[in-house]
Length: 343
Image (cartoon, rainbow, N blue to C red; front, side, top):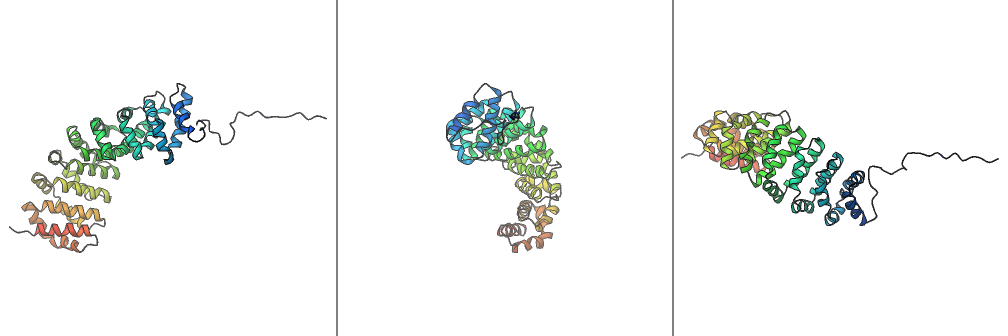
């Protein structure tokens, strides 16, 4: 008796085969094939290639070969693709590329910053987020920050702070932080101080801390200090001195310190009673908070009214001269010297 074969024809893929990714060629042929498929007109092939590339680039050993093969140029073309999957994964690939020094150089040399910034207006949140992550990573080097400033992206970044989601706002604040180390004029000209002052009242502690840090950066030049006084930023910063977050307290004290370097800044801080909360921070558990508070008090003591008020707290400030952190000791010693100075 002959048994009939009962072969089951399955529509399922074999195990360990991912239909969303293209199979990789062997060895150094992998990038050649991926690059060829990235430039194909077939959407499905392009999608699978960019998905595979995203995984492939996470291995640092592949980065130099990818740049030599011209992968960044291919990704640059895909940034304007109509398909959201292609745009999302190409921006993610560029974020991974930007995580390496040679990758950041390639992004700058191939003029990818502007095409990448065009995705700031993308209708899909994930594409915008990946674009901002890549730009933020590029901004972390002086040359990268300079490239972003030269591409005139600062006005756009400041504008996006008003409308973007919380997660993306954090990335923008970090990008602006590095850009303002290179140039503050563009930020000041586009009302960045006004936007920062509004964000200081945000619910998120992370956003408040990053914003206070950016106010400190923007207050380095004279125009920045004057603008902070003009938009009543100091009063908001004084309120943040009692915030539960140590980062918020430290950056708020640092921003007040920077603004109070000018006479106008000193008297503005004195008018909003900045001294009592700053004196309280002299005994803060966080050393950065203590240092910034002491430096801010030193600036305020240069005004006769400030010195007079601080003389009543001199013993508390003197106690920090025996602090366990050398930087706090130095700041306290200078503060005591300025407060007790007599003409």
